[in-house]
Amino acid sequence: MFHSSRLSYRKLNNTDFDFFYKLFSDQNVMKYAYLDAFSSKEEAKDAFEKKLVMQEDDNEGIQYIVTLKNDHDIVGIVDYEVLLKNYLGGIYEIGYFIQSDYWGKGYATEMGKALINFLFNNDNVHKIVASCHEENLASESIMKKLGMSQEGVFRLARYKNRRWIDEIRYGLLRQEWSE
Image (cartoon, rainbow, N blue to C red):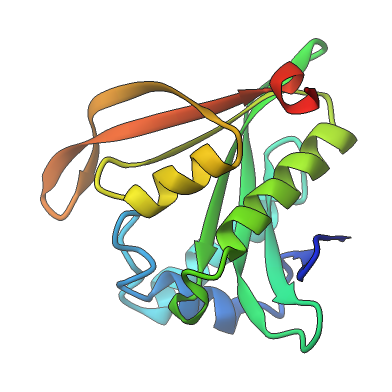
């Protein structure tokens, strides 16, 4: 568990299914995500159980439930996935999903910054990356606010809404973060 100025972060657990389903079945939240919104509770339950098993090993990744410090309302989920890890460090990909009621209030940036700081301070991380759908200008703006630099465009790398679209990738090296 860790904190930022307005938010608290705790590891996703087996009591969080209802929120998990609500968030990831919301068409607005999932508009630009890799995966489509869940269409049934059964589909969501399977994905939820796989996430719980996956995060038993910190070397794969973790999803954190993000709540307001004052009243504990759930804002969203911030997560990381370990893409590569060796004795010299790892490359982790981060992501953030926020309930639409909380959009436009700086929470995604705060969540991303808190997770980046937590990972660089508590693990042997060489680099943190994030990516977004080419039309997701809000997410791209957040990555820039996090101090990330654009590393490339993966042409027609995402399939969403029955079409291939570009993916934009950003990255932040440990030495850039520490400066």
